[in-house]
Length: 223
Image (tube, rainbow, N blue to C red; front, side, top):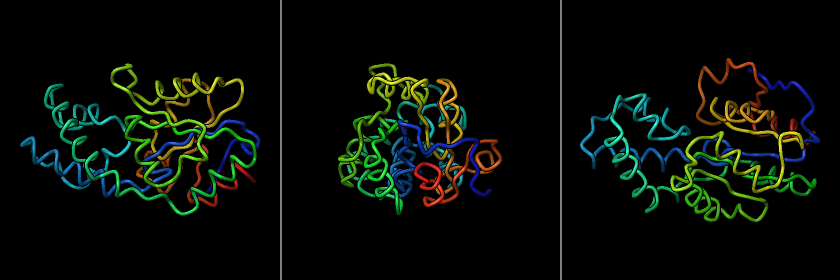
């Protein structure tokens, strides 16, 4: 799929960015933590391809829907994953080439730039601080079990509320998976899917604005 967009996004004042597979290449750390979790919990390894599909969507949902685990086993896997990821996995994430410059450029343009990720918010902040990417972000938003914020639409709602903006003000959600676009649609936001993350055939076939490369996304958002 080549770059396509339904309307001019160069003047949209608020840009929300997914984290894993959009801003940072996080697969090595996530996959290592998943490998640890399945071994530690004594669960059958689902195979490398299925492990890759767990990057992005809420983990407990994926464990239950993809593997048929009950809530208790899925939560045990999530906790084992989190322990490993917070100990070392988060340090393996690296920004995709050009994304730091895009974020700083959007801020220089006077745009509001925030993260909206299904990663726990505290973990997302740790990843971004480790990579020195927090200075040009207005807000880092993620999931929070205690607050009942577990899905992308809820994360987006929280980010918009804390930024003090609404869909009517103009905002676009950028991510690599369909759930990013679906979460945006709940709030009437524009969405752009990107081609360098962890999406697959469903993302490439979607009738949505699509940027195959970071330079294409740059042109979409900044001209």
